[in-house]
Length: 67
Image 1 (tube, rainbow, N blue to C red):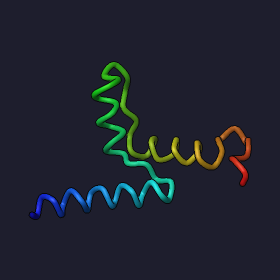
Image 2 (image 1 turned 90 degrees about the horizontal axis):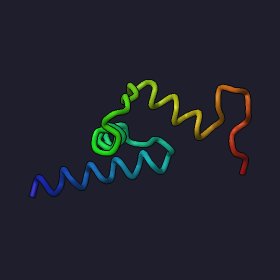
Image 3 (image 1 turned 135 degrees about the vertical axis):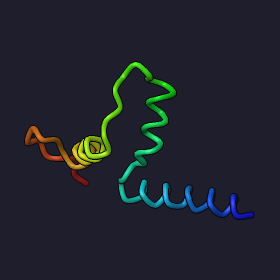
């Protein structure tokens, strides 16, 4: 029973982060290890910065998407 609650809590937390535009770093690391083992894995800080730039606009001065 507790394992089901823990799993549900994990998925709800992941869904909440995705709703506010914050992808899950642990899923990224797992994906990289499984699908791209030859490529380096970004640190948590690099991952966060890259996701922010992808969502709100890059460091090159271009504005992000507009509604």
